[in-house]
Length: 106
Image 1 (cartoon, helix red, strand yellow):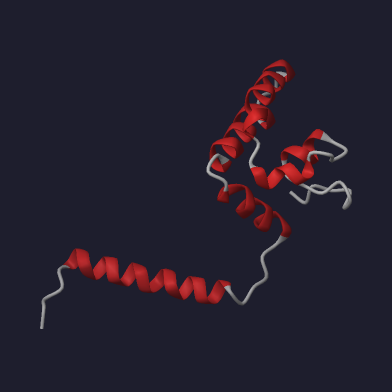
Image 2 (cartoon, rainbow, N blue to C red):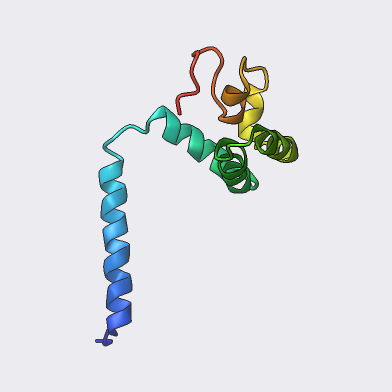
């Protein structure tokens, strides 16, 4: 029998723990926000867009800074969000929400 090093034991235990978490998580339905975020993050540019949006558009207090950042990141809107291009508000569009629901769900 092959001896397992302490580092390998930690790795094996970590993998087992994550598998247990994933099994447990399957019992709960994903919320609307989680589903939308997952959709955005599947896009190759999704993480960069999301971080850029939150840090550069939502967080700044200066509206000119926020507007400039939104203009810069707008060409990289993830494909997942393209369906929301006709949303009634920029917030719904940016968060990939549905204008039909009246709320972005975030």
